[in-house]
Image (cartoon, rainbow, N blue to C red; front, side):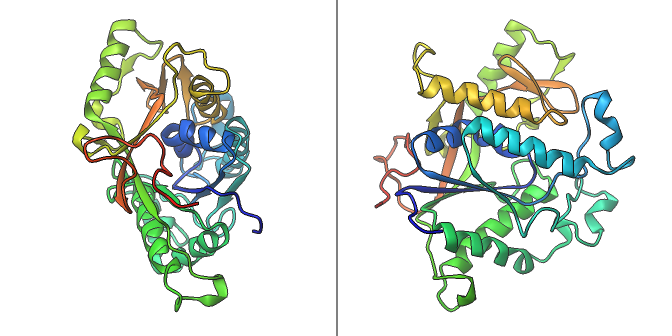
Length: 306
């Protein structure tokens, strides 16, 4: 890729929809600001459950065509966010969704969880060396909530970042590149608590609410080092944070088989309501902070030389 923009962001996710739920505001903001936003999705999400009854025939225990359908959903979501560089690790269908932890699908040949990290990582090394991101966003070691594909996405992302920086590793994949800053997706506990309190106070179309333990990446507030706002103070800023929050919600709605959005809340296939977070939070785990000690960054590129 030639003539790269000055700022370049790479996100690594397990399935289509994870990116919109976790990082929709962030992706919309940086795409609108002219940064190169590259999304790498590791599987097609073939083992997901299907929400709309009229699409139930796509499920893995029926026609097994959910993966190809979710490719289209992802493309629609990326259009809502303004992101044009979205790829599947190793190409569409190279690695299959592994299902939830402990199920038979974990052990299937070709399942992402059943793939050696060093066999998957070179595909991401090639992307890193092509797009040369200064910032990488992915999951924590637990994948946010213990899903095998999320854990594996974390492992592959961190390993690929290490290998991409090594000039001796696979020079055929391009010149070595060191990613300046690596972030993990997080949610401050106070924000999660406030979000569920709001749902209880305002009510929801969903029959019941999820629990804080169902929200991936919830940690003590002290671990949060960056936040990207998706709402302006009055909610009306043209082309600014308010529009990023709206784009996030639209991108989530594009994942029709997996996500049901109702105003400020959403539900997955379990039909349990949870807050739709319009500010997104991160923990810097590698690189130099771009904010004074004790303050949160409001730009993931803070302190990065262009």
